[in-house]
Image (cartoon, rainbow, N blue to C red):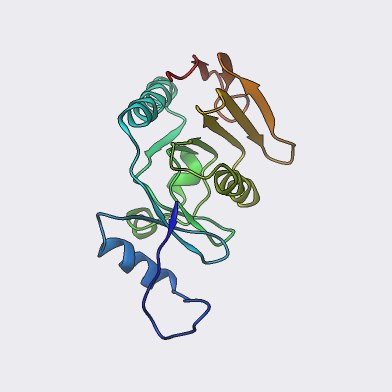
Length: 195
């Protein structure tokens, strides 16, 4: 992850952007994947390589198939930016929101960056992702109300499981993951990542 520096003379230490200004920054720079932490720090995300992109797609496919069979919510790709209740604007690699929560949002809020925390998120660490920054992102999700999150770390052949109000659990790969009560009946078998 790289910080995006904006040449603005507002304040030498910090640039405060309104939600609308941040939205416009993202819309006017479609080639950049920009996120904003709860503290207002802007991050430019590097594109991922082929292996990570393929694995990310597999996770979305598996989640999408489960969701089509159960019709319990909405699945979102890594292109979706969520305006989290904790103040950050984040794009998980995959996300899911329970249907009634999604349907309570007015249509205009669904069109921009939805002001809602997903119920479930997946993050897949790429070679360019700083592990501690990714862990901070997972903690930000939990603080914003995400109920279950999986952070895959191919470099360590592990997955970190984040649950609301609990310590993270770390498992070595291969493993089988359960969607627990958040995604009832969803099971994901994860092999070791290719070196």
